[in-house]
Length: 233
Image 1 (cartoon, rainbow, N blue to C red):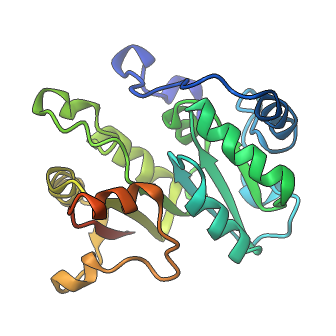
Image 2 (image 1 turned 180 degrees about the vertical axis):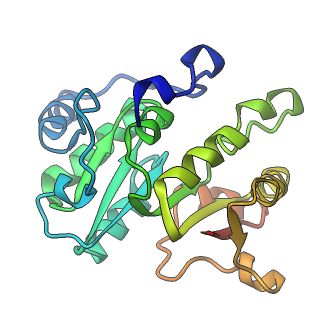
């Protein structure tokens, strides 16, 4: 994306934690060495064909925004070696956990970004992604904070720009107001078609779903998760 066409950073803000508890020396070391191998460099122009970003020979590229501890991303990347995965996680402790995991079991089809996801979305070329996953994002439950939710008209514009026709945007959450918010925003946008015919369709986890710690917490606290899928039209 041409820098002159990017939304002004003065009109947006990043909301989320960057750091948590202090890292152990081995985590810091894994982070440093892992970044050398897996971190994307957004100071150079993105390749038109994103498959060239990966060591592996991949045929498709998917993005996961906010991968937390990396349970889902690691599972998907391991089970689908012919798909390239880009994971975004600005929370340094979550990224350190991921880099510890790939130090033990390297993945040739993985790249990561440790800053605001909107910067990556603006860097990516048009029609370059086969899928985007936004799984259990921060719900910002207070109404006065809803403007901080990642699903917004501007970010849906970003998704629509980088997703190929027929590409999938998948959203999972256990917060009813955020689920409804996402359905309403995607419907209003007009570039996404919700893939559900009955209630069981969106209360059923995605095929091959490994579960996450956030989902487990929601179920323990008796909140029913929803799994939405939208096609880029």
